Length: 77
Image (tube, rainbow, N blue to C red; front, side, top):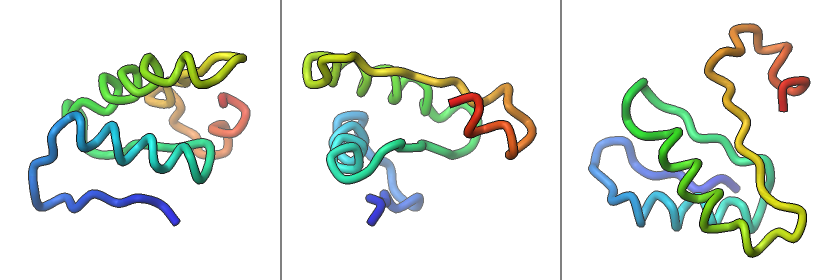
């Protein structure tokens, strides 16, 4: 079950990072979505940096913003 953060309140970056890390423990891949400019990319990169030592083969950030065709998402990842 995906972790959801209510969109009607402000959350701290640390709270958002904790929620994403909980999701990663349960399922992969994990996606962040929302309107432009709210910090999704910055958050994803911060979580990836924090998790580097937990994954011997590393972590990967895949920018999906340029992908306009939903059929191409899986291939991009």
